[in-house]
Image (tube, rainbow, N blue to C red; front, side, top):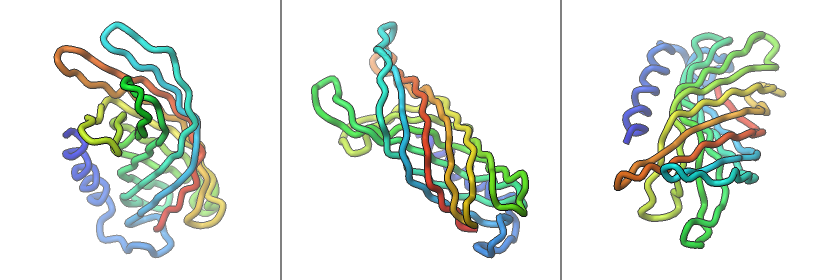
Length: 193
């Protein structure tokens, strides 16, 4: 429920700062839209009240989505969602696909906007843990953050290395279930501006 309210607010904030800028004119100032695909390593523990699992490490497929606006050619403010996808065996012995990641307000900084090379990114917001391909499974939410460094190898295309963390949880029938995760990802990102 929290994400349904946060998404429109973040989009409104991002687009408020953009003003009447032209979209897709080759300048980062104005509307930006991006997506990416990659892979990485995801490590997590889970806890049910006071009982904590051993740390599990999985290889993941990573998806990335960004929408927002460039304040100028150096700073881009956006709604950013980075999701890791992987399979696990649930408590019933069934194989399920987990989608877990960080979604929130992102900032991309190009320290030398003329060079179109190195950039830094960060996202602060919510983390998630869910099984979107399964019916009747609630998504857990908690605090999440991500930091990254990227290289724009040609205009609009870059490769980004990022580190993320999150603490999604859920309470049901007075039992608190939680996950804490760390993820390292390498993603190819396309950003239209």
